[in-house]
Amino acid sequence: TKCSWRQLNKLQLNSRVFIFHQRIHTGEKPYNCEECGAVFALSDTLKKHLRVHTGEKPYVCDECGKQFTESGSLRGHQRLHTGEKPYSCDLCDKTFAYLGALKTHRRSHTGEKPYWCDKCNKTFTQRSSLNLYRRVHTGERPFWCETCGETFVWQNSLKEHQLSHTGYPCSRCGDVFPDRSLLYNHNLGHRWRDKQVKRAMQKKAEAGNQHITALSFCLLFIQKQKKTGCGVHQCQDCNKTFKSKHNLKLHQRIHTGERPHSCDECGAAFNTLITLQVHQRIHTGEKPYSCEECGATFKSKHNLKLHQRIHTGERPHSCDECGAAFNTLITLQVHQRIHTGEKPYSCEECGAVFALSDTLKKHLRVHTGEKPYVCDECGKRFTESGSLRGHQRLHTGEKPYSCDLCDKTFAYLGALKTHRRRHTGEKPYWCDKCNKTFTQRSSLNLHRRVHTGERPFWCETCGETFVWQNSLKEHQLSHTGYPCSRCGDVFPDRSLLYNHNLGEKVAV
Image (cartoon, rainbow, N blue to C red; front, side, top):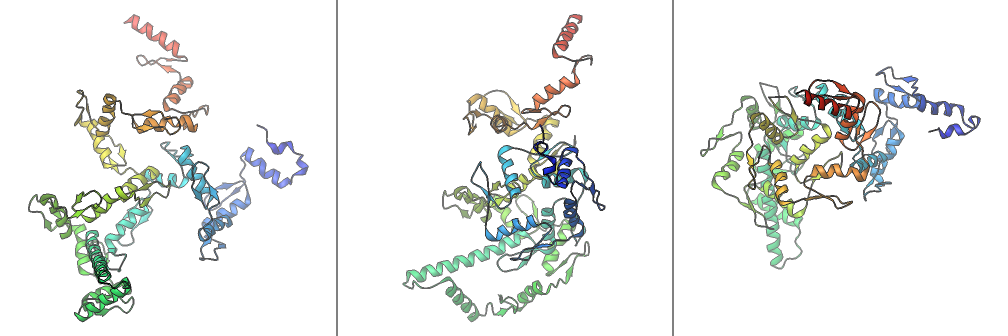
């Protein structure tokens, strides 16, 4: 198509602007960065890019003082303070503060993935996801622990690891614990005290004192502790009180940063001896708490106690909605999200929400491309351990799932469920555009391309695009020819290959 600018009198245009515009067609990029070699069509774009290397951020937010390399980034940031979201999606009711965020969001509707890996052709909705994924090929591990030197591919993996050195802090009182299970046990104490306060307030209200408040009751609660000699040792930095001088001394190390106990193996330092001792089990592999029933061993007494409920059948935590009982409080809380619909964990890449943090972690691998589970037989990688176990059955030949309606067996439970729908006729997945139904979610996702117009498969030879991968493979034969599977001869047309195969059959 002709450039609309060329239809204008060139004299009417600023000659400099016209020259810049022509670079769109010529691909000319005369300005290059001496630091990294990146090239640009405009000198202004090069100037902005150089700030990546110099660290210059000349645009400052008046509200919070945050600095930015570009004025557009500052304007977008200021909308976080004003709450303004001027960019709205025309396919749903979501609004955004940034135009870039809207563009990324729209790809969740269209399925567009414009960024692709030149090593394996995997595609992504965002450039940042592609950059993260490339570490799978390069082996780059840019995040490292300053305490022990271990390196990580992902920042979240580093943060989780660092807790093994620093301990797990309580968000309510600041106490730090060497083990996640000890923090969990500690939080149970907070919940118990909350219940005590609530019950006492209810009793007071029932007795006719309607004006008691949570604050006034807490003050009474503290006064009662002081009378009994409890909680009289107060921290001068945060006013927190403790039952003993020893506990206060340990707490004060949070403020002073003192960590007198260090690990001989890796040099990690800790503020309490018990924290160090639990940490050292990482190196020694020690699990001093064992189950008398089955011999399983654990690093902490709390984990052993939870495990023993498997044998005793104890389920002390029950759901008020449906009566289901659970052996841990956290399991109950997760279950209750079925009734409340709460999904507190959201993906920053695509906005998907999840009830469990583990489910979010697995989902994030869709964006990052991380596949931590590797098959020892063939080297194929997987995002989930369950997928690896299923794949390994292809090597062993094991097919533990059998259909009770026929004699077929399967390596995957999901494959059995899909197969059974052939007997029952069930098609649980339906298209919201035309109401067509499908036995598998993957079939529905492929069908949706009929409505969205998405054609994700393209021919590198001529640039033609296709809805289906099989269509692309069929098309590519028009460039490469149709090979005979028996003798290797190649034919320019399928009919010629067909005639050739007839000759092979006659010869046989």
